Image: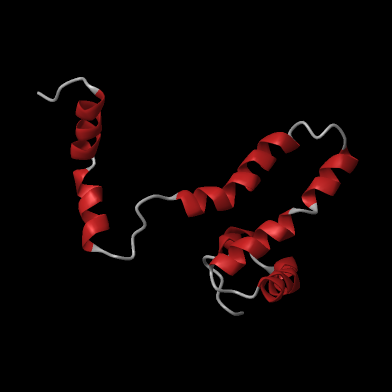
Length: 112
């Protein structure tokens, strides 16, 4: 049995996640943590929560102006040119099938 000390808890944590640690060591493309992703989505996630309490439609509309910047940041992370990606999305989205809108996310986007 692993001791209940801080070191024991750390060892227990590692042992319980051994299969994931092995993947990290075997494949050099894995990051040791997901800080890059968490930092990229944090403003969107906190914004989503805060926009529930925007106070008025005008404030909510002004806040929504920041979302294209988020799309641009994510496009950049995927190796896309941000302005071009946003332009392409805005050109095709009016006729795009709603059940395929996830295709327009930077991670899934192919040049249309």
